[in-house]
Image (cartoon, rainbow, N blue to C red; front, side):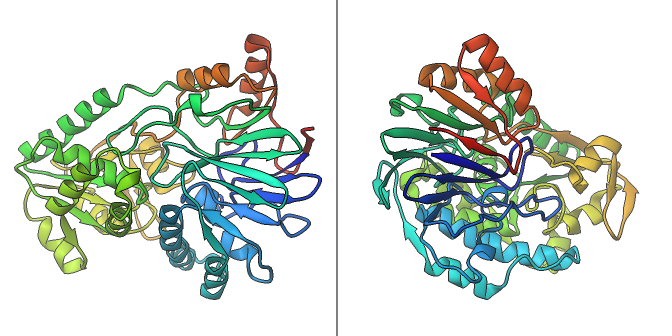
Length: 418
């Protein structure tokens, strides 16, 4: 078996891994580098199948382009497909807004959708002579970690995962994985510890309440998939006296998640939080809600697009209001620039922000301690490190300190696994 590193190696973004067995070519994810629109490398030969592990653009964002002139099965959970469809259409709008070349067409999306085969957790299915197991990843609703077994060898691809439970999801369970020969793992936070979720929630809620008490607006940018739902649950946990508004794709993505209560840790709590939030649809409504203290949960998470831009243009000079980030700010985005410089800069505006700006770690990725524990429990024969900025250092650490052969290839490399 060979592994083709098509994207996401020694970098974060455009994840794409091709496993070539003696009989099949199985593609795992096919994303996009969100900040630049860069695709992964193209497979030299048509894959026999593609397994989509979760609906984030850095893992799913280039898939429709693969189906322009080709047809092959696309496997994923129903929740993953529903959320991916939303993101694919939205990414076309973003490309137009940023005056980039369209990544694909609506026809490409329809061709990809026509190849979809829905899989569920705990299911085993075959791609040619390879056996695939699907495991719960704990990253976002519908996310999976597949084990690919071929010629007696077992490869686990983590995609993105989390072993710590949140309000939204239970964590992935290392005990599920038996006799793993090769582990292909994300290393996003290989050198970062996440604070306890309870501590993050407490500090976040204190910032929201302090803003409301000061007569301001708590503007909360969120990623549509997963993060919006979790933040609604956190806000609703204190039985707030202030209104909570939900805007943009965050609303649609949360509605999708609610269709899959079996995936959620506490579906009733999410349903209650969603029903108590107030949906916003128009600029007139957006203007109106800025007249009194409230919390606004809206896309986009890196303030690159979506309704958050409308609100920021109105609030950036308001020292009573807060801008409360809830996730990682991707390099070269408006959110990252604002955190580093205190300025909100887009194609149309460049201003100093007087709001109270804070960033809270609601990460859905595994942290350093948990990642090392996961590796020690599995003890695979070989580890491939990817999806991180320090892949080489982490691979060397695993090899030297844990005694497992570990490598960190570059995108474009081919690795012989067996």
